[in-house]
View (tube, rainbow over the protein chains, first blue to last red):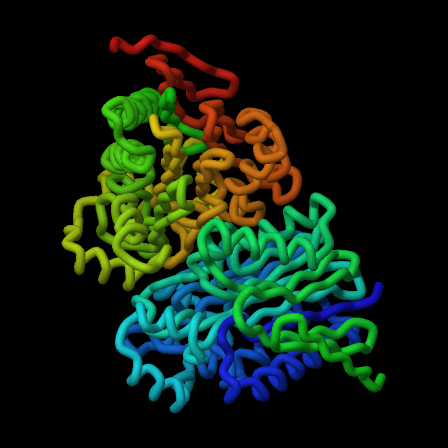
Length: 308
Length: 308
């Protein structure tokens, strides 16, 4: 079966200053995931690899470079899900972990549970030997945080102006016909301590099911939670809609029903894929059959043939 | 419009020792919610009142009487959701709060967020004046915990034998035609610190939407998360299924796909309701048009006319 990887670097008002780095970051992440798939790796391996690449890139609000909460701390959320078995792992409000997506995968594979929060997630990370990271805060984010005053301003800035960051994610279809998704975020600048948006929530920030496909969401987390956006998109696909139509109608519904903006990358089990958003911009990239597609602005799609 | 309240006290192998108290508890909770509705109160007020009643009853694994985690602590999860606006509030892994459902409601009404975890939930509770409670652990639960040795045994005991407890929840339809849901739990005995199951997760432990209805779930949390059970049931209802048919087919799917047992109370926006489960027992009660229905064993339904 032909493999597919799609990644996003967050749906928000990405400033021109970050445009080039955002596009470069999602292209790198798509290539990282594609390499896994081309070498016969699983969809789970591919989405983890792609999301780790985005977490390690300080351009994005996940892992290194994540935004700070109201107390000036980094608190991270992530989910990963296997579409073959519906096995899933998630961590919420975890501190000082460079790659929350890998901790989420460990929750999935090494515990009887699906989700661990805050203290418990840190205790588990320590027990399995995941090192504590104290260098997640970047100098630009520290300055942005110092200039921001309240959560209200944070949300407004994030979705209406050039300030702030957002979530990263990936979906993949491997050569065995299995799909997977992963999502990772630092959330919203000046969020309350312990605030969790959609990102680590199964059915909201992501969902993967071989019977339909895989989705990773981004945008205003509270709105995405209220409409369980990832699961909603896949329900539309179960009803026969294409990836594009399912993303478009679900994002439109979210806008009408709860006045929320966001984006999603969507991949069907047959390889039909889409990247949709209702925010000013979303950096995304995909690779299918050695063709790299990417975009940043609405209705924008660039194409590049990869050398095999 | 005719009002309806349905409550549950958890789907598991309820031992005979707890049968009478479980039935009495859900009947009391249904009456508490019904009184709110009869007095013109909102569905949100009714489900909060009913769930507080169940949290305060030490028979149930929520609030006072909750089970202990692997470290011998109580960690509580809850969600509440308003079907008119899709507004929602949730808390996860919160300690020393007697009524997590009311804290979840405060998250919904007093913050820009939907979900707070652990430390952050406690900080918020303190800030809004919700008192710390140090008497949530009952003597029977302390003894049970001391006799149990591992999480593995905990899960097995919970779903296959007479030991352990489970979640509580309520759904309501008020005289204005609005629906709401609420769910609250102490989770599974000997769970890892920070473990979160389905209960506080929108779309899994509960969902409410005036366009379809309201659901509160109970059972094996990790399985419910994997199939986003509450949202799945409502998707079936959006496709035209009755509350009973939607609950039955969704619980059957969960059993087949991820080998999980559980239960759900379901209420459509037109007042069609159901209480279904695939565990040995689930204590439930409903009140519609001054008729109290309740049950504990499969296919069991008792009826009592209430004095107006």
